[in-house]
Amino acid sequence: MVHVTRIVIIGGGPGGYEAALVAAQLGAEVTVVDRDGLGGSAVLTDCVPSKTLIATAEVMTTFDSSYEELGITVAQDEAADAAKVIGVDLGKVNRRVKRLAIAQSHDITQSVTRAGVTVLRGRGRLGGGGQAVDGSREVLVDAPDGTVQSLRADAVLIATGAHPRELPDAQPDGERILTWTQVYDLDELPRELIVVGSGVTGAEFAGAYQALGSKVTLVSSRDRVLPGEDPDAAEVLEDVFRRRGMNVMGRSRAESVKRIGDRVEVALADGKVIEGTHCLMAVGSIPNTAEMGLEEAGVKLNDWGQIQVDRVSRTSAPGVYAAGDCTGVFMLASVAAMQGRIAMYHALGDAVQPLNLKTVASNVFTDPEIATVGYTAADVECGKMDAVVVKLPLRGNPRAKMQGIRDGFVKLFCRPGTGIVVGGVVVAPRASELIHPIALAVDANLTVEQVASAFTVYPSVSGSTAEAARQLHIRKRVEGES
Ligand SMILES: Cc1cc2nc3c(=O)[nH]c(=O)nc-3n(C[C@H](O)[C@H](O)[C@H](O)COP(=O)(O)OP(=O)(O)OC[C@H]3O[C@@H](n4cnc5c(N)ncnc54)[C@H](O)[C@@H]3O)c2cc1C
Figure 1 (tube, protein in one colour):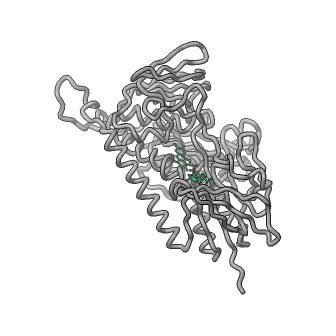
Figure 2: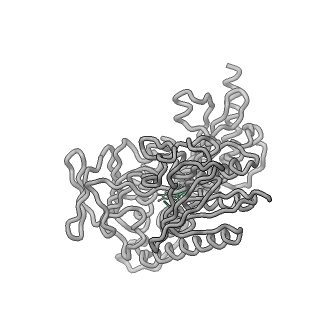
Figure 3: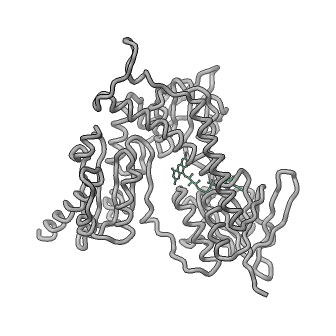
């Protein structure tokens, strides 16, 4: 009898469903257990909804920041500012957001079931008792009707994601004090929005609501917004935010948020109190790893409750793998999916390349966008990577001039001797699309000479990438001779 490997995946986000597809293609018998719907938070509450909201914000920004310069006229009554002639129906935007999210979850469910995967609705956890004699493990599924089902698996993948962190003195009420999963229930645009937290999520929402027409205050506990990103990129964004009228409060830690009628009050650690109509809390996330029988099964967690994994997604418990936000490795949908696939390649004996975080491309969906790949300025500064750096402001790029783009740059990092491209940053509208050639160069160990020799379209913003590569070629020659 042919032995078919039984795989049970707990969590149906990108970490889980991408793994399920790979495992089914490799001939395993696959079951996915999910609580909320396939696609996970990525599709239902986080990534897809926020980027759909931002699509509307982007149109507003493009119009607002370029109509005068590009010669567009708007029929308007005399008193009104042209930018205010267009507006946003937030109820309609949010209905579109939810519709798209549900449709995408539905599409994923269809493709997963078409691949032969069994999908169970419910809460999954590891059964007690560790591994059986045959090496299998038990997964228990608490179904919505209260029944409990027991499954046996030769390998289990935990891909349960994470949820928004809440502060004890800033409890969300879903109306005025909100997490990022609750904003899509709003029917009207917040008039005065206070965003607490200036990491990627806080910055994206602050920029989006500012563009949609809210008066935004961004409360950042650090010196500048986006403390984890390239400092030059963060400076450009903070400058743009302020120019557009956002109140960016640096070095301000929010201690509590109170709702008083239809208003909110945010108390800061220095004693100041700021007021608004709504407050969005974006202060990080907590992995969904509690009460899942993990530690009892020998799965090690760190102090933040994240599952410890190696580069092929193995946990400390044999036969148990983990992927995605519950591991805290690099909280991106693309990384979750890659970790999930790698786990299945490993579990099912296929060829496997360990996870390489130095080739991950990521993007902050603000305006301008900030896209990054490979080694960073911080890596160069702390001596982790020896690299030559060139930064070209987009102000000098012909296409950018034609399009009225003033803010942004292309930055490339290469090794001093070989000229191999090891990283890059693009700050520009649609930087998420412009980073791909740099990501390819980093992934394939291309040299600046190879990047410089490829044709770019004239005029194009990506011409600046080739120009940066040409300048790096000269710079490394000069530095090599001196
Ligand atoms: C606002 C926001 C915007 C983002 N935008 C982007 C972006 O643009 N690009 C990007 O790459 N990343 C983005 N991310 C990050 C991205 O959403 C996550 O990295 C991604 O969702 C991780 O996927 P996952 O599979 O680990 O978990 P999730 O997508 O969270 O899926 C986990 C699933 O497991 C289920 N689950 C949890 N516990 C159990 C249980 N015990 N039993 C059964 N099911 C369970 C959950 O209900 C959920 O369905 C964003 C995050 C946020 C907060």
